[in-house]
Length: 182
Image (tube, rainbow, N blue to C red; front, top):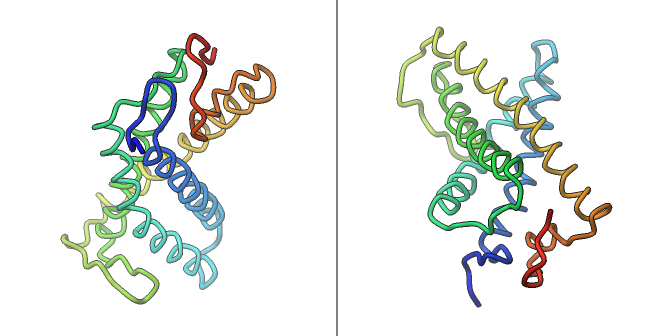
């Protein structure tokens, strides 16, 4: 079994990275958007801690996803918009997995992973940096949400309207030679 991608299809490592990463990112986006507008209190703190703990668990997988994509060429999307969207999605994931832990640590807190493990802060409390990182993390997450919606809409368009099996590349079905998604 070939683990890497081919020009016609994504390999199993890329597919697992994609779907597991998508599930984690959607969960983190949902939780983050849910608690963001809540007033301070125990309920908001519960959701914030869940977001941080899940983000800490997601970090290695998402970092591996970024490294894998940097080291392993993907099947090229046929349109420039798709190529740029994929690159921007990956760039935003990088921003989020860096700004997330740094936001917690610059607030002078350890990253608590469900009360089992705590990753201590490598820095002292830095209020100005903390505020900036919170803004960066929030802006990147909102832009990621828009791009995820665009990405899902494009996948649905290919599956339901174009019927060109572009989605099949991420499901492990190679496209027929000479037939590319438009």
